[in-house]
Image (tube, rainbow, N blue to C red; front, top):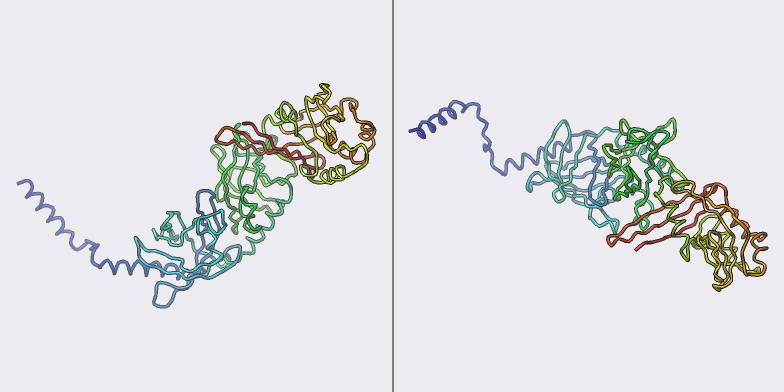
Length: 462
């Protein structure tokens, strides 16, 4: 009886609402699909100046770019030609709209402007995993939302203005940003808004090019970055990502996250002629530098206590040196003025071939391992990545004429003037720890007074 009463009530309710009821299935599936295709085709083609998007794809690396699209629809069809523009140029492709698990926008024919993001194989830089087919999800607040058919990555189209097609601002941003990369190092200098930072205590975030980008063509190489920094005592190097140049500035496709704070974009201050952090509440700017500002904690102690005691640390030769120092070392190496003191190292805890414990100094040796000349040094730790050397005694040698040559030889005097330069040397290091537990220190010494003079050294622990 209760079941009969329930059925009667439901029939009564449905009957009373019959005039207001919207029939969901008053069209066939084919008709509904055609209507959805027509709706998207109209939305895309009816925008006077097309659509724009900042598209970000991939996982490692995370890659993005800014695009503007203009969809020109074929008469009476749901396909046509789409013109795509970005900072690198403009090109056309065919597009089509169909229905496959939803209303589908297909970019049919390739072009170099948009398609550099497709085909996921960064070892051959032909793409980074963007979709060619996008399922239309919704229209909301004037924006069109799509989901990549394969990757499920989001593409959001926003109506473009006529000015969005003028890419001169993007080219100008790219050019001015490249001007900040002319020195040895490229930093974000954060002076407020992030835990522990102030004008007196800035946080330096080193901006680098990923190691594999060295094999790219120059135009592609300039798109990529990663961050290296020490924050709250933790050393971090982020995955590779790309800059996205827009009319408003630069977007990081993979933002920098520091604790509770995120840095995602840069804006150009035309008055100060500098790139500044664009996120509200965070103060900082892009800072070019010839000296390493990100210190590796304990690196000076590590050199004094360990590396300087190793046989081939710190070799001064034409191959391990850069700048004027490399030229000086080349002239020294190929000089045949006797005595020839070709091999030059900075050493600590040096024991001479005849058993003398001589301590720290510059060691000059000939081609054999028994003849040597030793100039004592004092190694002074100035900071976590800053060291300087001072002369600390007279030359000890078993080579006839070596003391006089060290005192008066043109090349050796030039070498020692740099080694003993009063402002000293700053050390920049990449520290790589492998799964097996080995740690590799890839370091460069930069002469503070003239940073173009550099000495390279790589040391490892197993």
